Image (cartoon, rainbow over all chains, first blue to last red; front, side, top):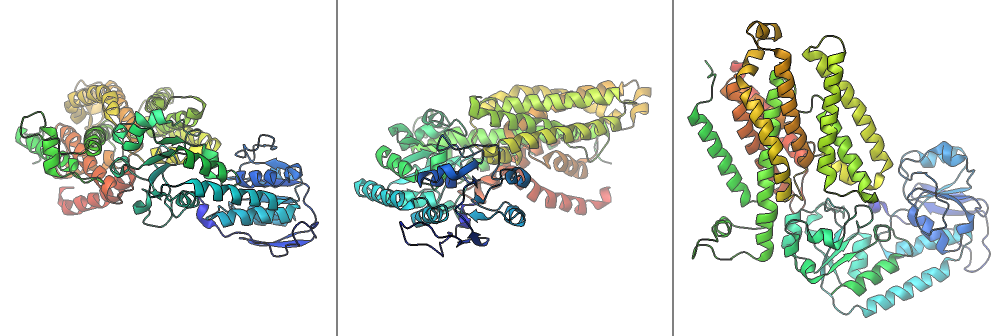
Length: 286
Length: 340
C-alpha cells in the first residue's frame, strides 16, 4: 500500500556500461544520497521485488539474506526478517554492507546509518521506466548485468503489446476478498493500459490514491469484460469461488469464463516477472 | 410518569418505522435500481404487474446482495442493541456494552486465526464460526474467573472481562503481525462489515438470535427487579446471580452470532438503549423490545450510509455507526436533559 511513494533512485555516478564498476559511487535514494564504498558482498534485501531484481541481474551470490516475503527465486536465502517490522539488531548480525528496502518503516535508514550500513530505498514503481531505472541502479551498485534483462524485458513487452489487437476492454482487478482493487493510475493499471484495458475502479478512486475498495453491487453493475484475481494464493480465491459469491454469477465475465487467476506475488511486485503477468493477461482475455 | 410497559400502539408504530426504513434501503445503493423496478421485481409472480424489467445484473444485485444485507443489518443491529440493553440491566452499569465480557476480543482472535489459516487450506466459510467460538470461549473464561475470584459480584465479573479482553487482544495482535498478508482483511473485519454477504449468513445466525432475543425478552420483568440491587432482588425472591448468568449467556450467544457475521460494530449497543430510555422510559419492559426494533432500524440506516456515501467504494459500518451515532446521542441527551 506504499506504492505511491515512487521516486526512482537514479544513478548519479554511473560508470560506462559494460565497464568494471568504479567505487566509491553515490546514488540517489528517497532518504538522501547513499554512498557505496566497495562492491557489496553481503547484501540484505527486505523487498521481495529487489530480491527478484538482484537475482535477475546475476547479483544473487552477493545476497546473504532476504525477508520473509521474498519467495522468488527459489534459491534466495530466506530468513524470518520482516520488511514491515525489521529488527535492526538481527539485521546487523549478518554484517551486511548494503541493505535494500522498498520503504523506510520508521527508523531503519537512521538506525543502520548509525552502524555505518548503507540503506538503498527502491520504492514501488509507477511506470515501466521506474522498473528499468531500478534494475540499472542495482546493476551499477552491485556490478551486475542489468543491461541484458532490461533489453529482453523491453523486447518481450513490445511483442506482447503488439499482439494485443482488441482494445477498450474493462477489467476488475481484485487485490483481496474485501474487494480492494486498482485504478488505471497505478503501476499495475499502467500495465493493463498497455493492452488498451481500463479499470472499473477509476470512478471510485476519488482521492487519487489508486487502490480503492469497491462494493460488490458496483462491481456487478459495472459488468467488467475481464476479472483478474490477484488473491489466489493469499486468500484461496479461485474462479470457482468467485462464481459462487452471491450475485456474481450474473456477470458476463463469470458466465464467459473470463476470470483470470493470477499469482498474487507476480501481480503485486514490479520486478522482471511483470512480463509474465502481462503475457498471462494478454493470452487469457476474451 | 414514564410507562412501565410497551403499549401495543407504540410497538406497532415502531415496527412500522422499521419496515419503512428497510423498504427505503432497498432502493438506495451504488447500483441504480428505482422503486418501481424493485416493486415489479418483488411482485414478478403476479401476471401483468411483474415484468422482467431488470437486467440480470440488477436482479442479482437486488436479490442476492442488497436484500440479504438489509435483513442481516436489521438482525445484527437489533441483536446488538438488545444485548447491550440486557448487559446494562444485569450489571446495573449504563456504560456496559455487548462487548463488555470479552466477546469482541474473543471473536477477533477467532476471526484472525481463521483468516490467517485460510492460506493453508482452511475454508473461508469457517471465519464466522471461528469468531463465534472465540467469542463464546472468551466470555466462558471471564465467567469462570469471575466466579472463582473473590465474591461473585457484578464488578468482579466486569474486571475479569477486562483482563480476558486484554489477553485475547494481545494474542490476536500477535497472530495478526505473524500473518501480514492478511492484515487488510483482518482490519476490515475489525472495523465491521456487512458487505459480501448473501442469504447464507442470515440463515446461519437466525436460530441463535431468535433464541437469544426470546430469552432476554422473557427476562424483562426480572431485569426491572434486578435494577433495585442484588439484595433487594433476593428479598423479593429473585436469584440475582442466576438471572445474571441466564441473561448474560443469552446476550453473549446473540452478540457472538452478530459479531461473527458483522464484525465489530461499536456504539449500537450503548446508544440505542440509552436513546430509548431517554425517550420512552427506564423500564426494561419498554427498553428491551424497543431496542430490538430501533437497533435494527438504526443499523439499516447506517448500512445505507456505508453503501452510498463514498460509492462506488464502501465505508466500514463501524465507522458509520460511531460517526453518526455519537452526535445523535449527544443530541438526544441535550434535548431530554430534564428527563435525567
